[in-house]
Length: 69
Image (cartoon, rainbow, N blue to C red; front, side, top):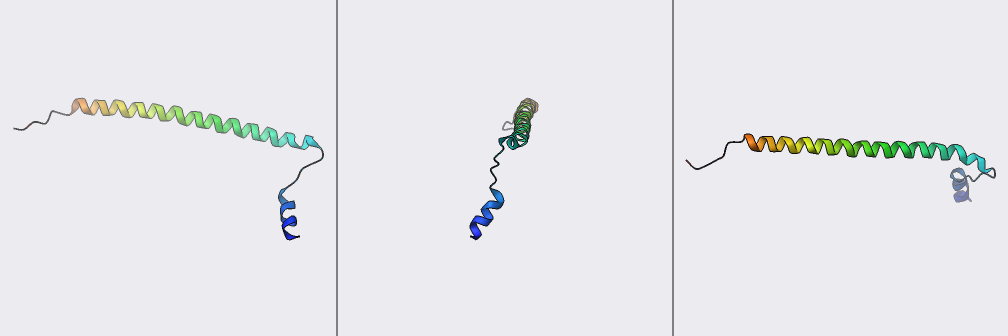
């Protein structure tokens, strides 16, 4: 009894299927936003990795050779 009452609070399947349209639109908007955000993070990450690599090369070239004297 209690379990069916709790589940009925979360499960709602409307008879009129047009009620799914706002949820589908919201889902698509958030999906596009998530994909664009992921793509932006990847692009920025690659750019930062390239900058780090260039800085590493620059520091290697500036470092004087260490020898025994």
